[in-house]
Length: 209
Image 1 (cartoon, rainbow, N blue to C red):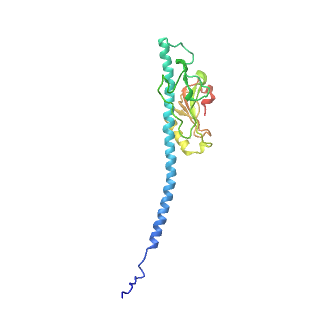
Image 2: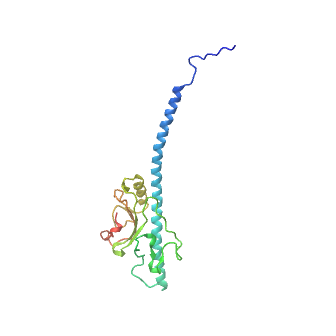
Image 3: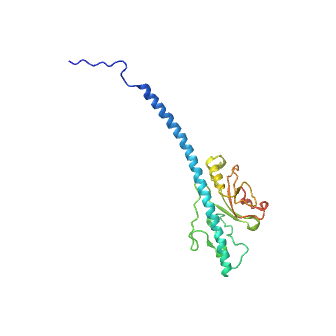
């Protein structure tokens, strides 16, 4: 008959070290969860910076291309001179609805004369708007966040601040500003000039933050 073997008192499962490891893993998981929030904010800010800057340049260049087409058409005599060679403000006020009026009113985007696609608004932002106030008030485009408290969003403020830094930016209308953006404004409105007003004081109110 076999006699059961007795283990020494020191034998058994080391519960203390295991509990310590479990607690350590819980702390690491909490730290990683908090870090993921920071990564998400940084990722959103990067997306806003890249999207807003790229869209602003594309829209501005496309509108200016319409003006260039008009100048070329006038030089060949195919289009009569006009006092305003830029697209008129559309009824909707949206950049997506712009027509190249001086060259026959063709749509500015994805038309028979233009294969350029209008960029979709970046996530969390309203569609780009446009105003043509001539040489007095200037011409500009702008967009705003859809958030009810955009100033309280660090990703919006950081993203737009860095986007503005890619241009000659100011917080108010100046004689040489390409972009008007005020990180302290409640609206977080991002304004891009197409043509400057006659003076900062005469700038159209739509083109102000």
